Image (cartoon, rainbow, N blue to C red; front, side, top):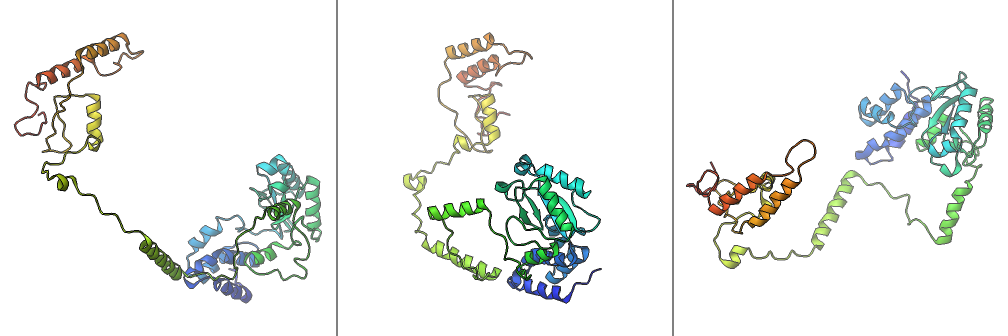
Length: 365
């Protein structure tokens, strides 16, 4: 098992000190870059180290380390060569660049050359579509790359050189890049003296200046509040918002208070249960009142039944339009409708009893 250097442990404490005491878990991402800067990948020992200094278990650390592709779980070469083969770069020739490198180096995706210099990988978008096809070496960009140009870059790397990226500072090794991703400055002599922005990026900057587009002011030294401070500020803001609300309007008088009526409330039709509404729709029966709750007497609808000529027209229409295929009726049988109509006019149910029975529930037994 690896034993991390004292310098790494000092840097780990410095990283954790950047965050409030009750938010130390937020230091996990830079800590994973830190252990990768020493070993070249996030080893089981690196996972254990991060868990130890943050008071987490190894499963919690491993879940994060396996989620992000920038954390390598097996030894990686000195230079990580990533070729974008996503839609835009692929259309512009990205796959051809990758295929040429794979054949030349004799390795495939996430494989490392025998000399330990180059690890090759597909990349699912490198966020530089306006420079495609693009290739990165340890996350520094080589824009508008072609197969032969990519081969020249890796050969120079294998020979000990450090070709200049299209944009940004001069190249560094993967371990040196991991130190920077952990939040520490690149201390190499002249590390950021070279390079420059790309023309599409400058075009956007010029358009912003031309149209007066700028970001609002922000102080990078603004301290990060602890969770307790953030909760307290949120509670104070909520209290102020509640205090600023206008007083609620008085509630309108209830109908019984205004009219003095003591009649019991009866649910509106829309308040009926879905099952009752469905049953009444499928087989309407004006002679049978179906209550929403036992013991509630619902008055029978006093509206006159549909005229007999309308019933006859509906029955004739059903008879003249037989269903196509399986012989099932297209709707409710006309005979049932006729029966219901007669019962409603006679004021009796199908069994000859009055709809409102002796217990006053209106439910047919």
